Length: 252
Length: 166
Image 1 (cartoon, helix red, strand yellow):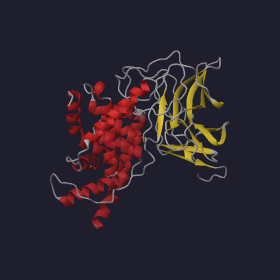
Image 2: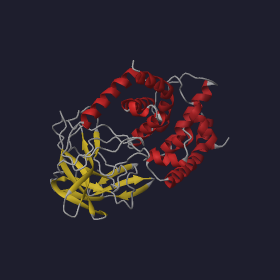
Image 3: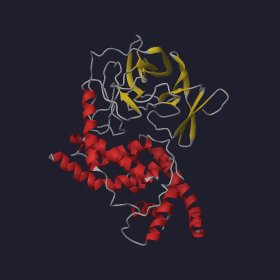
């Protein structure tokens, strides 16, 4: 028997057919999740429950029918000023998922501090990152979220992805939620922010180290915005690890 | 119970064991595996009205794998209770040895490699589908799979030696 055959055999032989999950709990939590999605879908303030972080994907070229099904995200639990074409939550899972709704009357995002230009271009548009105010019920220390957006030549902004904490503090030391591309027409380079005296952010994927580009946030010098060059890290590709180093090279 | 709910319960009972086991293969931790499988089923149930006529199992599997892959910082570790599960067949000692070997082998792989190995060789998905489900290229699946199998070949003799010394 080859090692691969042995592996296949071992994976099947160790199955536990008696594994039973508490379906009552599953269905109760599922109903709650469904309710939160509906609330969020109606554009109301959403509910915060025990999730560490959230990614809110806002429209702009999100997948339509026929797209493969990539990721599942927690429901949205924060409310941020939306941009043109807003889908208030992030789930995008099956090919049959309808495109996000488009709200043409939504106001544009209002960045906090300066917008960071990534240097990445999508035609005439620039890929930019900026913080926006968010509000999470019961979480007074979460007030900002990091958005990946595009800036048109006339300066107008449209947000593609917003990531924010949903519990704790948005300024706690260390990494916060990382934003991954959701197969937009304009791919979103992987991005996030780190709180602390970091000078370098290094991601690992497939055993390969990739340095992120970084820029301090004008609103708080302890906050370092980072993103990965799409030529070095394919947008949407999951990192296997990420570390931060200070000016002396010490790992934080 | 509504008809949709009855369908879901039937589906969940049929799918639970494989989802839990797949999660165990990816994490090496029974508790974490059950939590992950439960999360996948919660999200599946939340979307049940639009997926139950489609590929519900595929949806649950994708949700499970993405949920685990997103937790890439978690280290692989063997769950220390050493509780021997109910055995369906064969010699208990053999089964325990098989489980130990499997955990050691998978523990030598990175999270991404484990995910690809589980999707390719436990779920028997073709490379293209694995690539879609993990949002990576087919080339990445091939190279990662190849690297994982090389580690497997390297680790296997060592593991056998260790077993022989027990």
